[in-house]
Every structure is written in structure tokens, then in C-alpha cells.
Image (cartoon, rainbow, N blue to C red; front, side, top):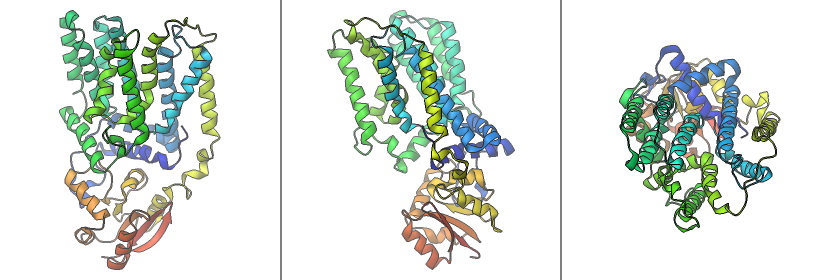
Amino acid sequence: MIITPWQLSETALWTGYGKHLWSDWHFLYQDTASVLPTDNNVTSAWLLSLIYYGVYRLGDLFAVAHLHHLVLLVLLGVVYSKTIFKNAWPWTLGERATIYLMWLGSGAYFSPRPALLAFLPFIFSYLILDKRSSSKETLTWRDWRTLILLQILWVNVHGSFVLLPLMAGWVLLFQRPRFQGQNLAGFVGLLLATLINPFGFQIYPYVFKTKEFSELLGISEWISVLSWEYPTQLICYWLLFLGVIYLAFFSRPKNLDLLRSAFTPLLLLPLLGGLRLSVFAFFALPVFLSHWTTLYAQRPAQKASSSPWAALTALGVITFIMIRFSPYFKETHRFDEASIFGITNYIEDSKQAQCPILNDLNLGHFLLLKTTNPLLMDGRITPYTKEALSTYLSFMNGTQTDSLISTTAPCFVILSQSRSSNLIGKMQTEYRFKTVFSENGYVLLQRQSP
């Protein structure tokens, strides 16, 4: 929940996209300057990028971060008012608050990026589908209209929009005896709604491209659930999976409704390698516990002695105090040695401000927002083809440097001291680069002439 300047790198990326969309309606940042082949940059987050930049102009990146804090608290309120704080639950208010705090620990996965805001259309869609599934009722025209509107919003916010047709299709699969023509029309409308975005059908390849590139870069969030490279989420996932199997087939009474709900396809997706595990950090616990109550038939329902929203408000105030008085919130921490902003400030203030930049993987976010320099070679994923990204990784490993460095005049290079120590030495000895600035484990090298 506490956002440090370094964690704001994702915020800077999407705000930077919004900055360029705001000015020229173009996602690619100085793509003509890059020595790597660029691709048609498509992203579902275009709408949020514009919103981020508007908020950024009002209060810098921390304003964008606190927008996400507000969204997270709203999400918590919606989910818990529909699950743990329902009067039909067998737990007391104190026990429910404990569960709430346990789930709030998933804030370790919190990051100010579009994925969090995508949980809003997700949770409202899920609640509609889960309500009809649990009551064994067919979806109404009103349900379908709401789902279609949510789909239009979702497809312009985040690539996870593909989950809504998947969840709806799963629920309809188990409603075959009551399947009506309106369900078929509604589902077709849902699919057509995914095309209501500036990129049309191209939005689908973008989703798979993101997954492919993430795997190429070795991002552990996308690893297989059969691998131990990310043990925390792996253990949580399998405990959840086994818990669902137990509830459905071995508990007394059995709870087959859980398998019919929109929850099951989300649980199965990681087995197919199609959904990052961290998605479960935000909604799996309350959804799972809502079905676990069938095992507590012997315990009477506990009526909350006070409004659940009062408890949520109190917890929200505590959270705000924790954030507000954290040392990471201080204004001076925006541009000090604990962040990476100093490098971007140095580049902007130098006389060679328009020199192209070759940057480390994690720094394209800040450069996109904070500088006007063209990017000679950028570590961000989205503007480049798979071949370009492979070339970039080869460069960072110390190979293919000749063809890249010899193609440009004076330029900046930003590298990590820990990851690229050999490459830094090669740049200094073979290509006449000099270290002109260092901060937070990164060095800025500059060459005045080729």
C-alpha cells in the first residue's frame, strides 16, 4: 500500500503514454530515432493513460498513485460488502475485520498500473454472473446491457478484457437447459463490444504479445504454476485450487455451485499458462470464503453489530494515515538519491538534451514522461517487435554492440551497475563513453562524438 518512488515507474510509463497521446495522438515515443524496428503500438490502456496524464498535471505522479489508492479502497469496499460483511455469514464482525486485514496484505502486489483499475469492471461483471449462477437464474436483458457496457469500458482500460467473454461463456455452458435466445444475442453483443476501441481487432494480438514478451524477458509473474520460480504465489494458487476441489467433491455438503460459477475458469487459466497468478491476490480470498460458509451450517449467521461501511471507513482512514506519514511520501523523495528521477533531471538540464538515449530495461518509463530526448534503444516492451527485443537483450548481454553504437552521433547510455558492469566497462574502453552521473545503482554515460 505504501508507494515508493521506485514503484512509480509503472505510473510514469502510462502517464508518459498519456502525455504523447495528449499532444499528438500517437503511442510510439520518438520511434523514428530508434535503431530497433518498431511495431504498431496497440494497448488497451490508452484511455487510462489520458486520465493519468490529466491527474499528473494536477498533482504529479503521487496524485496518480493516490488515485489508485482510492480505487483500491473502493474495490475493497465493493467486494467485502458483497461477501464477508453480508449478514448471512457465520463470522462475527470482529472475525470479518480480521479476514479483511488478511486480504489487505495483498497490498504487497499493489502497484499503480492499469491492472488495478481493471478490477472495477471485473468485479462488477463477476458479481452479475455469480448472482445468476448461484441462483440458477438466466441472465436478463438488463444483465446483458450492463455487461456490454462494462466490456466497452474494460477493453479500453486493460488487456484482461478477454476474461469477461470467458466468464460469461462458462456460466452459459451450465445453463444449457434454460438457454434462451437472449443469451445467445447477449453473448454475441459481448464479443462485438470488445471491438469498440481505437484499434479494433488488433487489440487481441496485443494481449498475446504482452504475454509472449513477458515470458521472453523472464518476468516471473507469467511463469507456469508447475514451476517454483515464484513460490509465494505458487503456494497460494495450489492451496486455493485444492480448497475448491475439496469443497466441490469431498465436503459435506458438497458445493458443486462453485464449479459452475465464473470463478472456475479463472482458476483453470493458470494451468493453461494464460493468466498471471497475481490476479488472485485481489479477489480469490473473499470469493472462495463466500462458498466456504456451506461448511458452517451448524453455526448461526452473525448479524453485524455496526455498519460494515463504518468498519471499512475506519480501515481506510488507518490506511491513509499509514501512507500519508510514511517517509516515502515526503516531497523531497521525488528527486533524491532514493529514486531514479535525478538521472532524467540531469539529462534535461544538460546542454545535450536532445541527444538520443539508450536505456536500461526499467528506465524507459521515466524517460518517456520526464525527458524530450528521442530513444535510441529502449528497454520498454510495447513499441518493439519480438526480434527487436531479442536484439536489445543481446546488447545488454554484451553482444551486438558494434552495429548499434556505431550508428549514432553523441548519445547518452543509462545502465545498471549490478546487471551491466561488463558492458559499462566496454562502453568506456571501446566506445569512449564517460560516466557523468550516477544514482540508485544506475550510471549515466555520455559520448560527445562518435
